[in-house]
Image 1 (cartoon, helix red, strand yellow):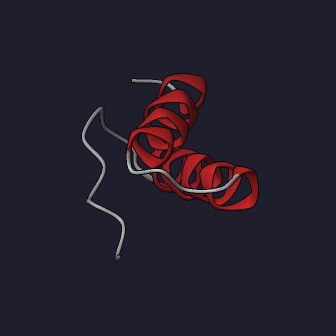
Image 2 (tube, helix red, strand yellow):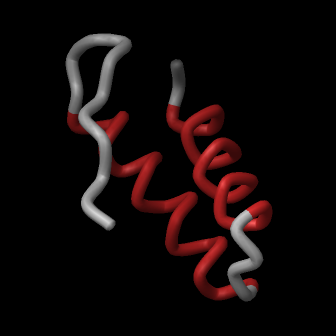
Image 3 (cartoon, one colour):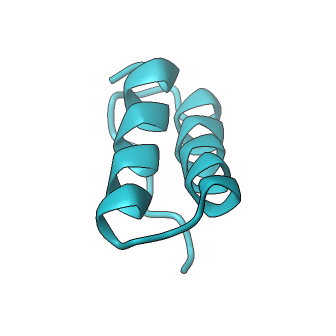
Amino acid sequence: MGAGDAFAAGYLAALIEGSDAAARLAAGHARAHLVLQSPSDFAPEPPR
């Protein structure tokens, strides 16, 4: 999974949860940030 995929997943998950635009963007960036730190295709879950 790439950073763009992770961003989309975080953004859409926050959208489904009913988060506002700022929270959706933050969730997307949090997921992408984790992916960019991982040398493999599996990134740890971000803290909630």
